[in-house]
Each structure stands twice: as C-alpha cells, then as structure tokens.
Length: 367
Image 1 (cartoon, rainbow, N blue to C red):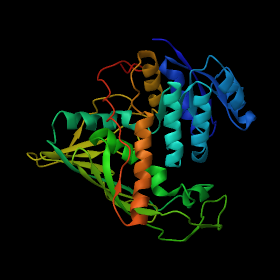
Image 2: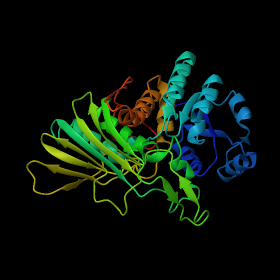
Image 3: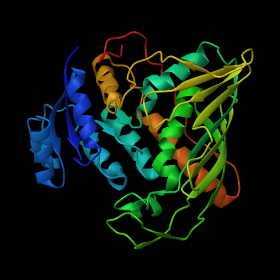
Image 4: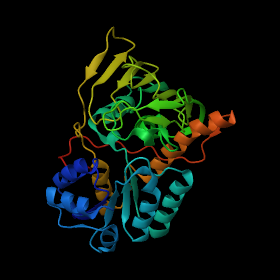
C-alpha cells in the first residue's frame, strides 16, 4: 500500500501520542509539523525525527503532503480545517470537529467542493473495547437493543488542571469536553440519533482554582456544567445521558451500558481504546468479562488517521469521518438547545453507522 505523507498542525501535549503512533503504523509518514510557536514545532520535529518543523503556511504549501492533522485548540478547529482543505489536502481534526454547527457545515461543504476527505476524533471507538461491544451486538448476544445509558460524572478540572478556565467558558463544559467520546461510541454501536430532549444547569456560578499554578483564583462559569437528557435513535433505542462537572467522588454508575431483549453489555470508558467489556445475559446468573476480539487496545490515538490513509488509497469512506463528527457536534448542541427552548430538538443531520473493524488483520492494516 502506498505510503501517505502527513503533516501535523499544533504541537502541544496531545501531539506526542500522535507522533509516536503514526511513526509506527508503516503506511504513514509524518513529513512535517507546524505550530504558531516555531520553536515548539522544531522541538517536536527533532524529538520524533520528523524531517521538517516549520510554519503553518510552509506546511500547507508542501505539495508532497496529502493529509494534515489539526491538533489546535477547539476554537481554531474550524478555520484551520478550512485552510487545510483550501490548500488541497485531506483534513483530520481532534475533537470536536468544530465549535459551532455553522463551522462544521462549512468544513463538510468545502470538503465536498474539493473532493477531499474529512476525519474527526475521537477514534477511540475503533479500539478493541468498543469494537468488541459492536461485535457482540451484531452477533446477537443481547438480542435486539432497546435502551442505553451513558454517564460522565466528574467534579471538574479546577482542582488539577493548570489552566482550567476554558472548561467553564462558552464552548466548554462537560458535554463539549467529554461528550464527543460518549456520543461517538453510542452512534458507532446504535446508529444515528433522531431527536434529543435535554436539561442543563450551571450549579455553581463561580469556581475556585485549587491546582498549584493559579491556586485561589476564581472562574466565572459561563456554560452549563450539568447536562442531562434523552436520545431517541433512528434504530428505536432510547438512551439516557448525563455529563457533569458538579459531583464529588468517583461515581458508581457505569460509563455506558447497552440493554437488549436478551442481555446487557457494560461498555468500557469511551475515552480509552481497551476494556474491560462485561456481558450479562438473560440466562446467566453473573456478569462475564469478554475477551477483546479486536486489536488497538492501548492508547492508539491516530488510528483514525491510519483509517483515512487506507480510505485515500482504496477510495472508500473513512470510519471516523466528517459526517459522523458533525452529527455528534449537532447532538451536543441539541442538549443545550432543547433545554433553552423547552422542547425536543429534532436532528437535522444524519450519518452512516461506521463499518466495524475487520478481525484478525496485522497491525497497521485495516482492510
């Protein structure tokens, strides 16, 4: 298979795992990296043996680079993706696809105009944990899925994060921080969403930072920090979802559970790639841990990029694609809009449920 040269824009903390994994995949070559801080780009290039650390403009002008990975801050995702596509290159972006629906729509329109692919994190649903759950569902182990629950329960980031202000500004909050992982996993298992009913609240209008860098400083909260609601899937499944920064302690609730006519699956943390996967059938007394059926069980961030490379080479659609990313973006807004407007939010977008990952393929091969 042809090796595809990629570039990376944004050389912050998350970039390290991308450099590490992409360099191991075989059919991907990281040819350049860029950052607004040129020194940071050059340092990453030296650290990971990337041929060139350069400016964003220089990277986008390189005719050998076919695909660019956008690891900038969320507020820049939309414009940087548009710049990538305008330069004639495929775009893969960290979650979320964009901050606003308008930006997300513009990205998809530009990609269609240019005949290019868009990919969007999270790609954790391509890992062994959730792929095993998908196989269990498809093989009938729980019968017909009828319901789902998803819980992301946290106290928030001001007690550990050095710069937590973003999480409480517009575009932050628990839904936009962690919702992409949970919603993407649900859509990968159950298909697209038809409508959403949501309720939101700012429980604490002011937060005090207790991490060392800014200890004692206060944050004025500008976005809901407790979001609860119901998802009505086109498949007929009804899901309940809560994301919150307002609870103390580690919750005893499951991350995700899928309930079927013949049993239940306890789905692992959708922010990770591995397990455990637990199964409780109607004819068994106890939960049973199921061996993972697929690979990519460790931190495999970048496997969505690898899937895009396969798609570029074969002409198929990539699994962590722009339509999926936009559908998830719209659903996150839907919780807030439903609460604000005191009515159901009817989803305007849809997407195909991503094709399951094949079994028993060598590392770095997805087709």
